[in-house]
Image (cartoon, rainbow over all chains, first blue to last red; front, side, top):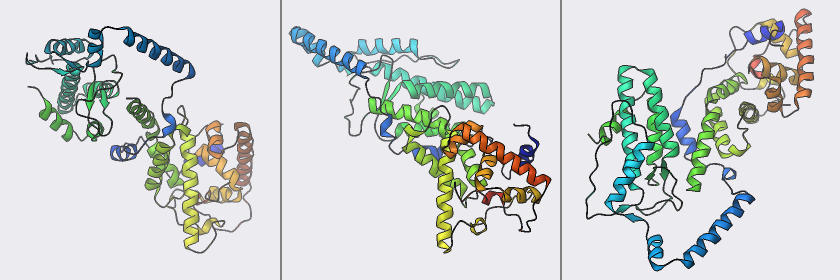
Length: 221
Length: 180
């Protein structure tokens, strides 16, 4: 049918040929700033719900049967000692890649301090993010397209899998009730993560000023 | 956490829909929209709000169908503002006249019913498959194929034996604002 001469003639009369992909990050950001379709919310399936009920029942039984020590450990689990934070940081390094030529900085945690659980992984996520941003900026300067794509891919993966936005009005030390089994950084509900996302969109569209600024401002070096 | 995961998942999915912004804008332009870019932005806003309705595997027919409805609404408003009906294609707000328009082809298209024209233009100008075009019009693929076959035959016949119609050719972009 595509070779039909009538259709071919009609195709040639097309006043506006099919366009190349149009990217409008500002419009995308404006649209997605609104609430998404509520029907897309992930609802537990009946089977998953049964599993949840079973798991909750077990958790309650374990709680009731546990000792005071165990209870105190579970009730106040949100702060950990510096050794734990350092261990989280080291473990996260195995899961988060750094760009070629970058290395993990040594972080020092004061011995008389406590830190929110998971913060070691959060440090690693932000260090990895900054490293990839700087790598991207460098790749743009060198006009290395492959490296630019690689950097963006890694940053998008970090945004998708390792960054969580706290709910509106959440306290500063908020952490998810069920933390993911991977390093994660928590962002305040203030549009910061959307700004970061917009920065990457702009950089991908050829405007790398915000990306370079972020690299400079957040670099540990 | 779940709400945020929902949002991230929705945004990820919406990006694939948003990638068709340029195509929707061109579709609106071809259908004679006065502000095709704004109309395409509105289509995308609706798609974000009703993302559950947008087929994840092939969003284009849904987007074009929505754009088509908006173009029709725009044309109706424009006609009301002028105190006339949009049933007369020539009274629709002016759309850019393609300079390369072949008058004979335009005349032949004008002589077809709007349903036939719509079927042909969705295939020839929007480069849709018959299945996709059927979804734009909200009919089943079999019915669309029959309509397209007849439309092609009629157009070919008109081109081979031009009708004795002296009316000047209208812009092709204005031909389909009447709706089905």
